[in-house]
Amino acid sequence: MKARTLTLFVVAAFLATTLATRSVAARAIPKLSAKERAAKIAALPPDDRKWLEEYVAPIILEDERDLFIQLTEPHQREIFREEFWQRREQAGLADPLGPGYRNRYANFREAAATEYDGLTSDAGRVVIIHGIPIIQEFRDCNEVFRSVETWTYPNQSGASAVQGVQRELQFLFYRPSFGGPRKLWYPAIPERELLAPSSCLGSAQQACRPAGAPTVASGGGAGGFCPNNAAPQTCDAACAVVATIERIKARGVADIAVAMSTPPPVSTEGLDKLAERFATLPDAGAKPLYIVVWQVSTFLDPQPNNLQATVTNGLPLSLPRTYKRSAACPRPECLYELLPTP
Image 1 (cartoon, rainbow, N blue to C red):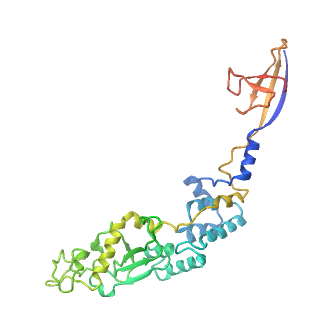
Image 2 (cartoon, rainbow, N blue to C red):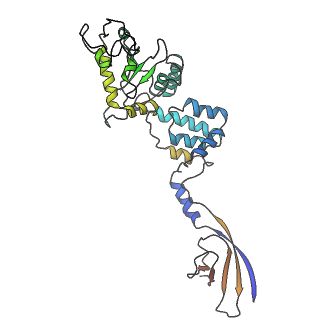
């Protein structure tokens, strides 16, 4: 029996389809596991890592972050940063977004650091995400409440808002210690935490009554201190504070948590088109391109009608038109019938 060996270079039939698809479809942003994300962030240059993890961390969206950390060239990351701000400075966006947002955001961070208890405090985090609030203080109620403040954002809304209906977003802060940093109050925190130690009140609702009206002192006030014969406290604005408490309770803990941590909503339309501009970015939507070497040994049987070929190395892709897969054995190592070239 005589044998001869030839090598065929086969370019997968996927090539033409893949190139045609990529010419008209935007590139999908590859999804990363937590481990992959951490590794790519650690590999960023220090300035880029600081920009991502500190400066824009409160407002960047997940898809934006995954795209940014997969960019490999400095000019790519610079282009990304410019478009990041442009998406947030379009006219018609709800507060705090819109024209000039890049500068306003820098001012929000400065204010959070210097006027609102620091960048990582409850108050500082709200300012960074939502901007400078309208603040109402209740100084004449400091004998009743622990330096409470209501923060209002007239043109923003929480997660529980009815879609298409704009409403105000409101927070309630208090100071657990005199002169200490503000703390956000939410329904999971007992209302008694809002009461001044010497208020002689058992609940915030008891403060909402006309001055001089009787009530029952309960438990010696929030701090367990209530002098003998001391009268439970109230103030002119007590009912307004209680009304704010009830509104926040109606929103629920989840809505407050979302408002504290969710970036201002912005459309990411066009982000995939931005990814398409960066040739070094892996394409999650592209089909793999194989250039496969097929080593085919042909065994020439003395019988002229029994010409056969055995594929000894390759992948289960379609062969050139000269060959046909054996119907009896679909595995790539099985015999293929050698046919005349069409």
